[in-house]
Image 1 (cartoon, helix red, strand yellow):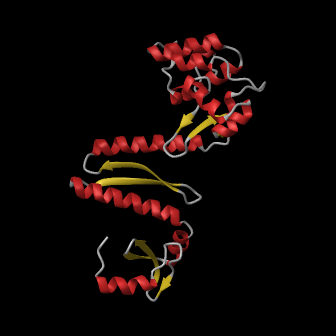
Image 2 (cartoon, one colour):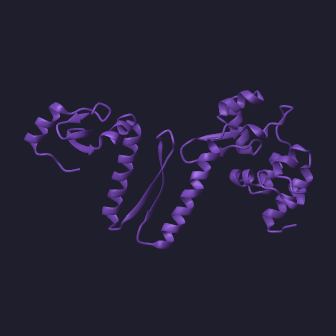
Image 3 (cartoon, one colour):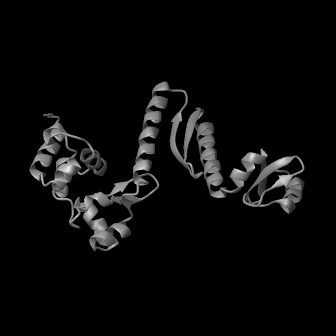
Length: 236
């Protein structure tokens, strides 16, 4: 951001507003950004201004992401691709940053971004509960739920920004923990997302059932056998 001259700064400061308050000036819609004693204004169209003014937090996140990436580009002398995922409600989440000069890096980053977007969608699902809500479901405190997660007794999934979420479906209709879950964690290397994918995949060894359906049907031994085969690269 360019440093304003002292006399210009004094004049500008009198009319400075926060981004939430910024509005129309003589030459169109403008958003005022202030950091300490430094002030700048960004021109936007009238239609865009309405969306920007309603989401000051999102705008701040985008500005921060741009500033950090610009600083990195200047420091390294490289160009970067910086990607945001924007949801229908206007929320923006950074999902990828990669050097723009390397096609392979860019392709890998794009694949990673798609994976991160999928993780975000999963964690936003209606079946996903906070630790506190999941604890209420099974009659345990939030602290106890966290201990059980670390032991592999319950499945907790983590994303970049949404914390740990617990799928409601890992509690059976009888209100009991999913049978065999701890053993499944051990078989698959104690990786929560690997366990999640296994549970939602149909397996020929289980008669075409998903791991989740088979566990709920009481086929614990068969499920663990399929999991061990997957972990060792043996397929039925």
